[in-house]
Each structure stands twice: as structure tokens, then as C-alpha cells.
Image (tube, rainbow, N blue to C red; front, side):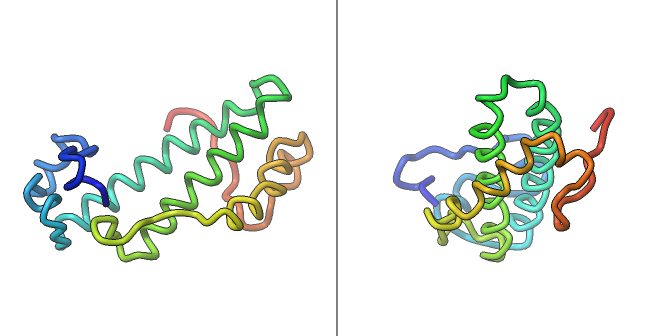
Length: 132
């Protein structure tokens, strides 16, 4: 939502070209099917990277696990907000409120505990291993 005031676009140029999205479109805040398709792609890719990162949390020192897990969880909430906003992050700000972030901390803490491997939260997807 801050591309025009800063004069910067933080999206991969090759993805913009692939989906037919231009800098001018972003600066003029024009939401169309091409932009929505690109945002769906970028969100899917971000979630893939978050899932990969989550696999590394148990390898961190115990004192580092909660802040890293909480960051992953809170940033994932921003992706949810972009989806809830109809992929319109050009004219609408996608953010998790302070209270939403605070409410997430107990779940983030639980995800850092050894028991989580055997008894995950009911709404979490099972952990995957390997390539992607």
C-alpha cells in the first residue's frame, strides 16, 4: 500500500512480467485479475517458505524458538489478511492487530514444545519433511 509514496515496488520483476502487472498499475493502485493472480502466487510461495522455516525452529537454541515461531505465526496472519481483503493490498492495509498478535503467542509457545510434534494444534497442518 505504500508503493506510490515511496516510489518503490517490492515485488519480483519477473513475477510482475509473468502475470502482466506493471509498476504503473501498482502506483495507480489498480486491482485487476492479473494482480490478484500474482498475489495468490506470492502468498503461496511465502507460505511455502514459512513452512520450510518452521522445520528449523526446533534446531534453534531454546531461548530463540519462541520469538522466531511467533514471528512466523504473526507474519502468516498478514497473508491471511491480504486474502481476507480480496488480495487488495494496494488500497487496503493488511496487518494483524496488537491483540491478534498477543493472542497468538500462547499457540506459538506451544508449537515450540516437544509435545507439539506428537499432539499438534487441531487447526495446524501436519508437518511435512523433505524437499519443498
